[in-house]
Amino acid sequence: MEQHEFLQVDVGSRLSAEDTGGDTLVAAAHQLDQLDTIPRSVVFLAEVVRAGGIERAIGLPEPLPTDAQATLIKDWLRSLRRSDGETADDDRAAAWLNAVADILDLRRRTREGTNEL
Image 1 (cartoon, rainbow, N blue to C red):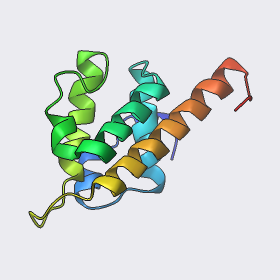
Image 2 (cartoon, one colour; image 1 turned 180 degrees about the vertical axis):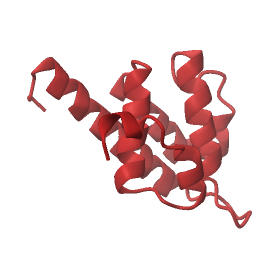
Image 3 (cartoon, rainbow, N blue to C red; image 1 turned 45 degrees about the vertical axis):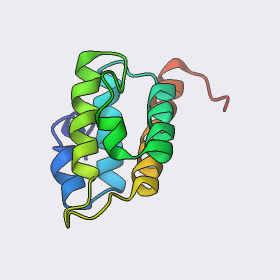
Image 4 (tube, rainbow, N blue to C red; image 1 turned 45 degrees about the horizontal axis):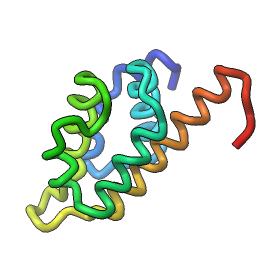
């Protein structure tokens, strides 16, 4: 997939279909990068999800710093809820958010020319 194609991916729909890997991860990182999201913000949100659950994270007034970031991530969090109506798999959702943050961080470091981890 080309870089511009990742921006067109409907991450929420893919998450609803339980497609949480590969292109979905990369697309999420691209889309958050376009909104100047700081990877640490996504890591913090993953910690909130792990500790309090997806529902608690959705209920946050500002799960990420800007309105555009918050709107996007809330859509994805809603999509990460289990479709069978059972309790969400909060650990799986937190792991997915951490993976997105890792890719986002790698993109930023590569662009900035810093490879230090």
